[in-house]
Length: 299
Image (tube, rainbow, N blue to C red; front, top):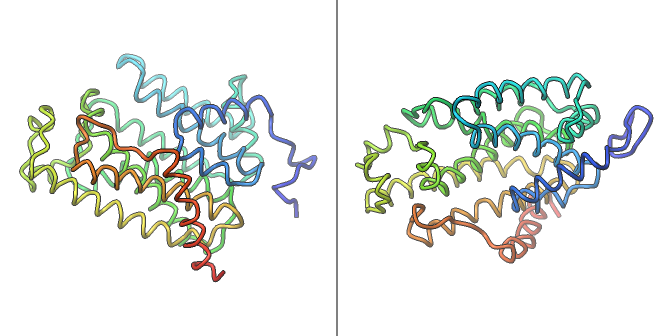
C-alpha cells in the first residue's frame, strides 16, 4: 500500500509554486482556517491549501463578479474543477494544485458538485423561507468541505465521521452568516430565514436600518445556540480523524466558535462591527483544544 504522506512515482511531490499560491490564498482569506491548516503534516497541509483555494475561487466569483457574468463564470469554475479531477488542469496554479491533491487523496468530486449548487443559490436573490432552506445552503457551501478535508486527514468511523464533519462545516457557515448580516445586506442578501424573522418580529426594514432591537437580539441568540449545537455534534467526530489532523480541525473549530463569543459580547450588533477572534486569542485556544482532545482519545 502506498503511504500518501510520502512521495513515490505514483504519488509525486506537490507542485511547489502552485501550492505556494494556494497557501497565500488561504492565509489572506481565512486566518482561522490557515491556523488550523498549519497543524497538518506537510503533504496534507498542501492538499488542504489546494482544496481551500479552489473553494475560495468559486466563492469569490459568487460574491464579486457582476450580475451579468457570474452565472457563466461559476459554470466555468465548475468546468475547471472537473478538469482538475480528470487530471486535465490548465495553467492556473489553483487548478494545478487541486489536480495534484485529487490524485494524492480520495477527495470526492461530488462534494464540489454540491458546492457549485450552493454557490448558485447566491444568484438571483434566493429567498430562505425557513431553516430547512438555510441548512441546505450551509451544507452545500461549507458542510461538504468536511467531505473534502476528512479524506486528506484519514479517518475511522465511516459514514458517521463524515456526518460529523458535515455538521462542523455547517456550524462554521452559520457562524459566518451571523457575523456578516450587515455586510451581506450591502449585497442585497438576507440569509436569515423568513419564518424566523416573522417568529421573532423582525422585519427586512429593521435589518436595513441596522436596528439591534430586543427582538433581533433574541433571534441572534436563538441562531447562536443552534450553531453551538452544530459545533458540539461536529466535534464528536474529531477523535476519529488520524494523527495531528485532530488538533488541526479542533483548533479551527474552537477559533471559529469564538466568533460567536465576540458577537455575544457585542450584544449581537453585527451591523456596525464585525465579530472576530484576535490572533492572540486563537493561539491561547490551542492548549484547550489539545487538552479536550487528549481526554476524548483516552490520553
